[in-house]
Image (cartoon, rainbow, N blue to C red; front, side, top):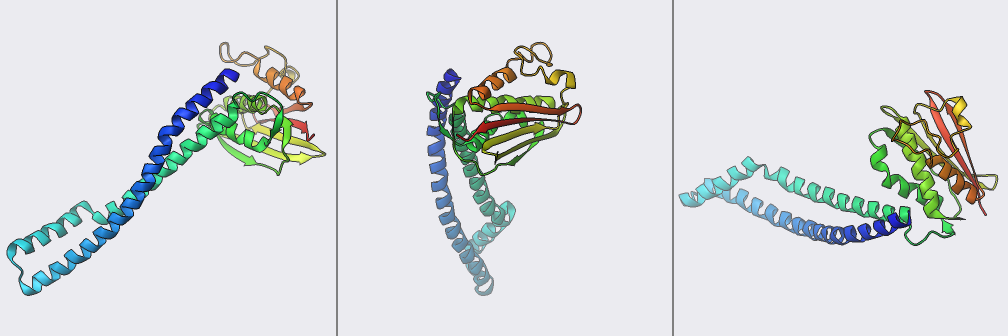
Length: 263
């Protein structure tokens, strides 16, 4: 994870540079387009008025023909639609650059390069940044519902907790065969931070529930799992003086519950 953190920081920096100037250029382009639209509207009013005068007073034929060609061209290219759509397209591009910025920031927050040490952290932010990093694994399999409570910052190893969230979220997606739900909730209960991550996937048989945190135990096909993910999650939670429990019903749902002391 330390190496991934260094890589993520480097990639984030490289992406931020071009994204920054693209975003800045799009803002300038939007301002220019507003000015051009204003100017074009004045041109169009002038042409409309000129056309009416030409019909009444008999302008020279070449002017009348030119006015007619401009009016026909406006209709042919549907200039009203273009003027409106250009602004929409620029707006969508700006939304895209903001999304890239957010992903880059989440990637940096997820990896926490050079910060594998105890520090005060916001658990909700950690879950959210991890969600964005693994979103490609989830978006085609599940609808994600989030119910974040008002949590106090807690002292933890944020990089390691993000690994726990990543394992649980990816496992949840893999447990769903076609389309399902992943549910995330956080709250404070009895002086402890409680995090629930559940899914409507295939579930875990009762005989396996007591083994899932054992090293090398896996129900996945050969080559698709090492059996170390949940064991690592268990050890990280234990390191934080916390607990992790699981409830599951085959064919219905699985819910992992993590609890940490606030202090």
